[in-house]
Length: 78
Picture 1 (cartoon, rainbow, N blue to C red):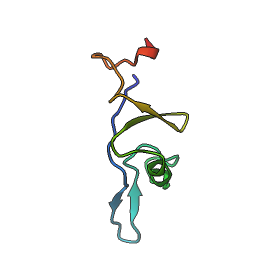
Picture 2 (cartoon, rainbow, N blue to C red; picture 1 turned 45 degrees about the vertical axis):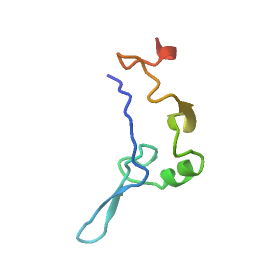
Picture 3 (cartoon, rainbow, N blue to C red; picture 1 turned 180 degrees about the vertical axis):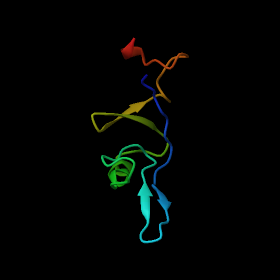
Picture 4 (cartoon, one colour; picture 1 turned 60 degrees about the vertical axis):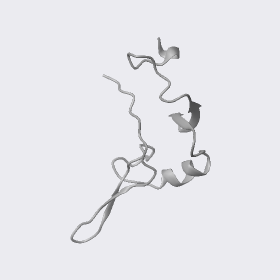
């Protein structure tokens, strides 16, 4: 089942290891999930703090909140 997940984190989560640290993606944009690849840095340059976005094909699309109805369905998805 598909789910629309709202993510508000703008930076990765650091996990300290014995030999080296790992950075876990918290924004959902990394192409190396679950690890951070720095995609959040580029995204933040194109996003306004007071706006909400969803990503379609890796590109930001400004939305009105989560842009879904009460059942969690986007209007264009019927």
